[in-house]
Image (cartoon, rainbow, N blue to C red; front, side, top):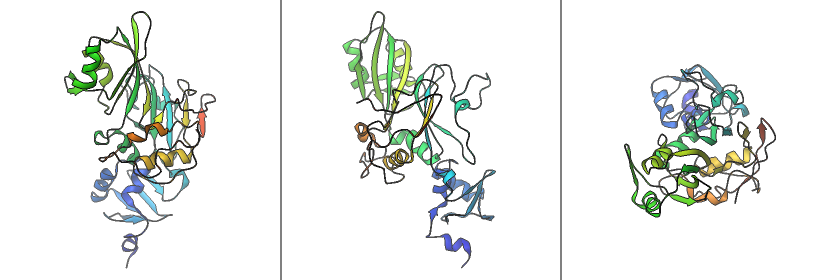
Length: 306
């Protein structure tokens, strides 16, 4: 029995290890393996292979050592200000959210969804391609919540249309899962909306279709992760190991969590948002866990608005 045969039935699946290291989704990694783009300990990888701690895995000019702590899944929160683009390749050379992220060795930060140039608020980054895919893929229907300031005020008929009938856009109708009136003064009015999709500029386009231009838009929640009130614009805060474990567990990728703590951005109130076809929550998932481990750009103690 050769070394590759011994790895079948032992250790972690190769595609899972690659996805968690930020190379891409599990399906994409399976395609890479089948195409001969991955090697393990200098030998071509095969579908079904499992890897053990200490194995050297190479793909796309990157090499990782299985089991190294440096390659554990990391999750970073960023309070994006207006005037930054969520891209590393911009012909206009505008300021990028990636400019302010901590440098990584052997991994890369993957943005979970996008916020347009004039939108602020919660942006999640992770080193796990699999986690990013679970949070972004339309079939998982992960909740996104926004604070929206518009020019004008919605009528009862418009609110009913946005919640029940749907607002027709060029790429299909949109219905908000939640729509709350948060008041306002003068010509501007605030609303809190929640939906389970991430179509390009979907919130702005929906209000535009209702004749209510958006003057300010901020994302305040993505899945079970809330924007910590003390995380100021332009600041980053990395989640601790317990919080990352809770998010992975909630996403159906891993299990296990630390004891909960009240100041975590990972919220119990959003357990119902667990991604997946059935809507069922894994045992022990989505409990609030320990606070933010590290922050840059100033002091930032995470907290949950209840």
